[in-house]
Image: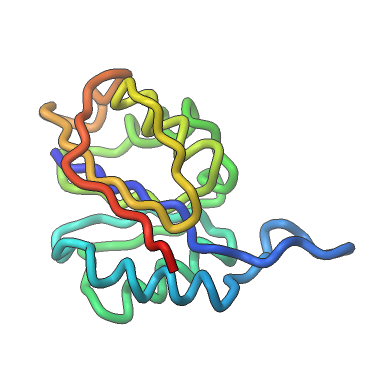
Length: 155
């Protein structure tokens, strides 16, 4: 199996009275995603699971402008989810088709660390592709993945 992890691109800081959930991407985030596009593999068969926050949706929409995904679902439960919550979410997914999970820190870094049993500090717009030699997402657990590729735009 294959698991793709992506932390949303660079966002503006929250201002007084604004909800964190509604923060938007900065021009730097748009440049990061433009650069990332050039380094991502073909993802026609990938099911996307994305936090429903504005910044993760914007990150997905920019990626989707130049590629096709098998399916996409926006989930409130992925917003600021912990690594353990993300793992539990993935365990609930049926089958073994590739997944792209778009989320937030600290959860996305914690999930990557848990699965690879190695330090992973996923900064904004960081991408990891993990090999998961299992038969179903229900079997996913600590130490069951290895890193196939990684990339983080420096723009």
